[in-house]
Amino acid sequence: MHSHDLAKHDLTAHEVEHLLEHWIEHNQSHSVSFRERAAQVAAVSPKAAEDIEQAAALMDQCTEMLKKALQDL
Image 1 (cartoon, one colour):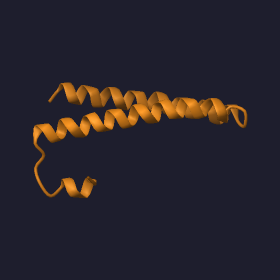
Image 2 (spheres, rainbow, N blue to C red; image 1 turned 120 degrees about the horizontal axis):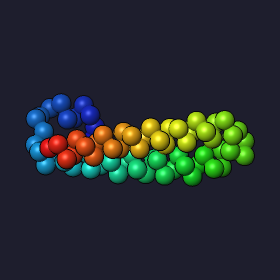
Image 3 (cartoon, one colour; image 1 turned 30 degrees about the vertical axis):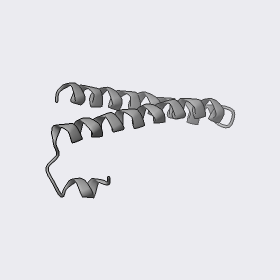
Image 4 (tube, one colour; image 1 turned 120 degrees about the vertical axis):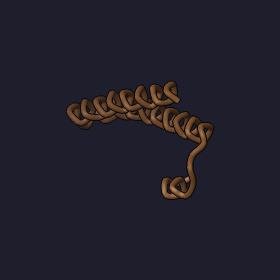
């Protein structure tokens, strides 16, 4: 489902829950991937690896906010 499809109808609580769960899982997957790749990137550019680690930390913050939104339903 694409974001433009969502605008066509009001979301049910179940749909919102499903969407938040999907985003949480997606973000967690990216965070793990960022950290794995940062270790590889470090051989090429330690500074770039630090930036990727920071991106992973920010992704974790986003995930925590999505978890909060899920609890607030």
